[in-house]
Length: 344
Image (cartoon, helix red, strand yellow):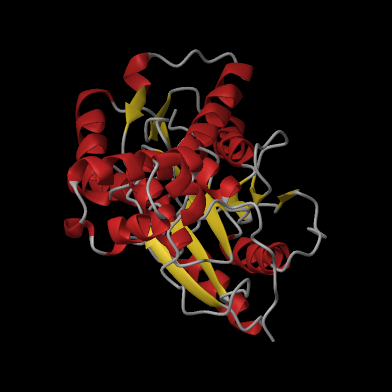
């Protein structure tokens, strides 16, 4: 049974036409057959639509004011294991609610995310789940204008600007570094992506460095390595680091980077953990099978995915968000074979 929710208040073609000084039919032609409209008229209509936050309804054949039964999920990538378990759990749980998942990726490009969300809204999506808290203001304004529920997933902060379900990535970074510090390591390198549009990586990095600072370690620039979530690049940067001035331990921003570090150690004949200890964050599929087995922080991807699906269905149905608006899902420390006390 479809759930209904009023979209009253969202601007339509009449409002756009009035603002642009044209007829509603002209607005319709601008979107459906733009070549039939003069360029200056198209420009006025486009400016009016943007100013009003108008979203074209590509699903106009559906019943008026009825829910589509579709939920959007926009993730940075599905090119590796980072979000695969999250997406799988989210999609399966949506099916239990008789909802369909529309998924898109923006490759860590928030301008591309704007276009993706616009496209989802044009298809009258019921709700949208976004990863993290860093988003273009245009994206959030479009969602607000159309009264479409939005849920942030994967990251958690006490002061999150959006309803969120995720893990505390700052604490996860702290835990990874604290493990090495407890083993006695003091010369630690940190391989993380630049903060940029990735608040999850930024929180982990800040958490790991905070743990080091508490232990009296002021990490020099040579120990702070900018590294994307890419095994090949992680291997190359780790090889450069290990070849010139190897630390006793490395904290990787996630398990993808950690695996690249392990491959670099193998290529250079650097024993792990005999010479260098390595920790990751994520506990992705394969992290327990790689040699040596990777010590890491397990992020609860499937739990986050299932909880997020339940919450966003409730939100899209117009029901009160029965869960706390900010829900933290605990992570777990997994100690394996890639870490040991520093060599004396």
